[in-house]
Amino acid sequence: MYSYAYLGMAVASLGMLGVVHKVADHRHCRPEAVNMMIFLAAAPIMFAVSFWRFGPANTLNVPAVAWATALVCGFMAAFATLNFQHGIRHGKISTSWLIINLSTALPTVLSIAIYKEAVTRRRALGLLLAVAALFILWLERVREERIAGK
Image (cartoon, rainbow, N blue to C red; front, side, top):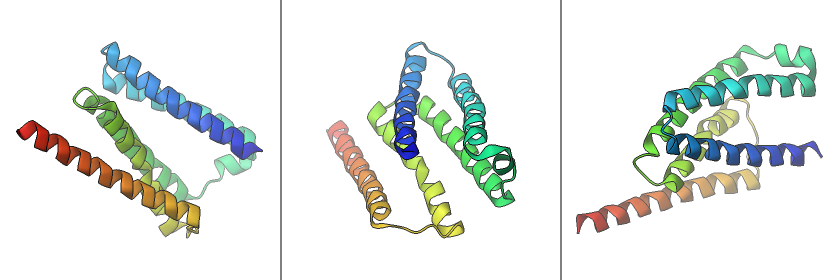
């Protein structure tokens, strides 16, 4: 039951993230400020949900490797989001949005490599679809360059 609620919240959050980016771009907000607002708002919300769901002991007693992985991936996500906000002014939002969503590849690979997470058929299909999306992006870029070159 919780999994569907979390899925719904994830979809709504992702949609709101896109809306925030688009509104910020139209109002000519500084990407750095928008990025900081997004990540500073997410941190206490995630902490509160973890505290409520897992309790204080499990929330605060996290292995060091998990903290390190979270910090590295968090900084990479912040950097990717900042680049997305700068890049959205120069290209299509659909291309930029796909690239920002593909940034989940590193945590996925780390989960498989470090935590020995099992790769089910469904997850393998998801990874293959991500590779297919990158290939389609590359094909679109080649087509656009060919049209621009004429």
